[in-house]
Length: 143
Image (cartoon, rainbow, N blue to C red; front, side, top):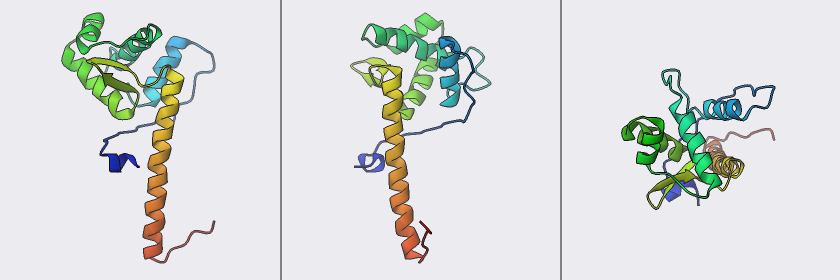
């Protein structure tokens, strides 16, 4: 079953940003947030990056955080937290479970791998429909 058939609204944004040459967990996490479109130039406080960092720390203890907990830890409003968390949910990075926000997978790597599978399913659907449209217009690819 595809994401569309499930009724899920997902929004994937992936930017091709060159990875940093040197390993630096803090900078790498920031790079990841930029690559997924979470860090926008107007967000001077890097809120999405700071939220994701807190969620990773919570994942080490196998727990999630409420939007109120995040807001308190980041000295921000609950509304700001919910705005960023909703973007992360739509991208498949974060889930909301039992009143708390958590990484989707047990680790950041497994979370990214799950997002990749989601995106692959979307492209499989796109290809299947494109092939059907091509046939209706008598268009054929060379391959």
